[in-house]
Image (cartoon, rainbow, N blue to C red):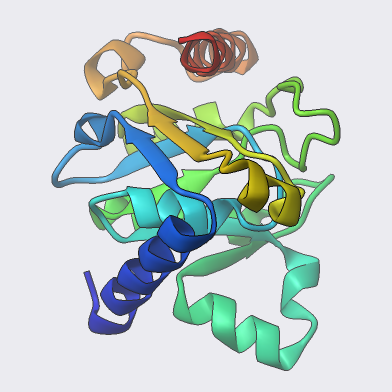
Length: 201
C-alpha cells in the first residue's frame, strides 16, 4: 500500500469513528495477494473510500468518465486509482485497463449495478463483472454496504456504517463456466445472491 493511500485510509477511519462509527466484517475473505475483484452494491459517491478504508489491500476502481471532466477532481481520483469507464456503452479502453490491473495482481473494486441505487435495493447487475473475472482468471469477492445518506441525522442517532465482505467465487470454479452470455448471467446471478445474503445477515 503506497504511503499517501495508507495515510488516507488512517485518516478516513479516524473521521468515520468520530462521525458515525463503522462495523467491518469479513475482510479476511479478500485474498492477500494476486488479482481479485470486489463486487459491491452502490449507494453513494462515498462508496469507494468507504470500501477502501475497510480493505487490507490498496484498491483500484472503475469510475464513470464524467468524473474526469474537471481537471482537479480528475487528478485527485486518479491519485487514488480511479479508472475511467463509459456507462451505457462497451468501453474497450476502460475494460482493457481494468484487465491490466487485475492481471498485474492488484485488487479492483467494481459496482456491477452500473449506477447508484436510489432506493437502496440491489438492481440488476451488468455482465461486465463476470467477463472481467473470467478474462483475468481472478476470484470475485462480494461486498455489501449499508449506511444512511443523511449524515447529520445518522450522526445524532449514532447509526453505524456497515461494510461486509463475503465468501469469494474462486477462480477455479469460475474457470468451469463458459465465456459466453449465458455463462456471464450465471456468474452475476450468483454474485447477486451473495450480496443479498450479506444484506440479510
